[in-house]
Length: 264
Length: 354
Image (tube, rainbow over all chains, first blue to last red; front, side, top):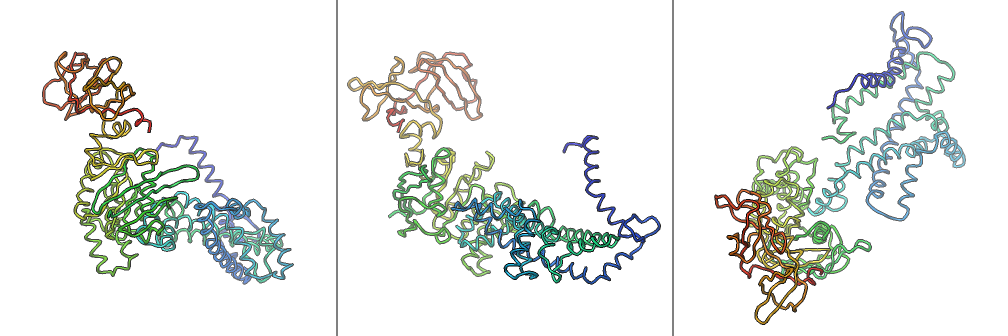
């Protein structure tokens, strides 16, 4: 390994500071005893965390978002894995179209998607249903999963699967026992990305959520348009903490390197 | 009745013909190598036998049963892949047990057979390791054990030794042959390494441009190559271009005015020919006492033997001589070259073009 020169070190430090500073600041602000968004100078207080739990709609929205992200990420996997297999292994009419179709949500602005779905749901009379909300999120997160699955499949030595076939495994068994475990890092990475994207999604969700299905980002947005107080910082801090804990657990259990990079 | 038969088997990929009209009969217990340069269709042939590639034309039968269109998982053949294709997420024992598991062999018997297979390849103490914890040679042996544990009627090896270093490759050649002898499985090995093919096979199939060009026992292939490509591909040889001359009972190859006595059947006079002579068939003599005089251009010491390049009136000729312990002729010294005319091979150039 080559040692970093002083210029490179300064550069890395600046990049890290740029990425981490807002997160650190928001976490500090959450502990302010004041009524405004400010760094705690007079003392530390948990009053804004208490305020979060005094708003039951925030708690409901939190669970809405967790369910929504879990369901849409999982269903996106169920869609993207077979699609990835078909796209990477076979040539068939409409293959490029299929690839483009699955990836197109990446290039359409979420605002446009939101308005379009709002109109569509009004026509279908489907406004406010949680199932339809899940459907819209699947569409938005599938490209991420598909990309990672395709990357995993393209780096895969197919002879392991062929070996399984010659040893007596049918096509499905060979996939389940050999191919799927070998592309698991891609699948898990895709699931995580999809989960995070769905959990974060605001722009489109504003249009397609109903009072019963408001997600956490939408709830935060609605709250923030009315009043800006340190409770937002407390919610953000909680979200950062939950994500960090989830990552830590995952790393301890499976190793993040193995899941995301496929290092063995 | 041959055990494994290929009749008129061809494979086209679009407009490209990878394998053309291969006819091959292999007996039970035989060790056959498919030898050829890369792109000659040898691996495609192997994959068609394994069922991983479907032939465009022709018929493949195993023990009297037509398997041309049978799925690979129904053929029950053992395949060892070039990359070994071990399952990275399974231990050595799980890898070896996979084929038995697919056959629903009861647990007790499975354990016993896995143990036997691992002891056959001398890896008994590695059962609980993962493939990533093994060396190249060990992985290779796991792949062989995994293929053999299902007691396949035919074992197919795709360049099994090409990923190993030179010393290990030599050891594994003998190891492969030992295992094959012990188990008695009919074996087909694909290789581009002629030394490997010659040393361990009962018969060698030479393939060029998708076609089979010669099928013979290794020593016959070496001594009687059917064309110039084979004589230069199988072992080292000197190839000298000349013209065939016949004068009553005597015949010779005319190379730029130098006549070298040789015999050949069915070659009309004045035909352009290629003369092939192996370096080890040429003896070094005192200058003026051999069939041809020359001057040593360079010499290389290879341990067990010396390799000379000799500048002669017919061109540069490579000569190898066993190391007898003494000092051989210096570079630049004049020598005579001698050989037995029976060791010359005359190949008509039409056969070279074919």
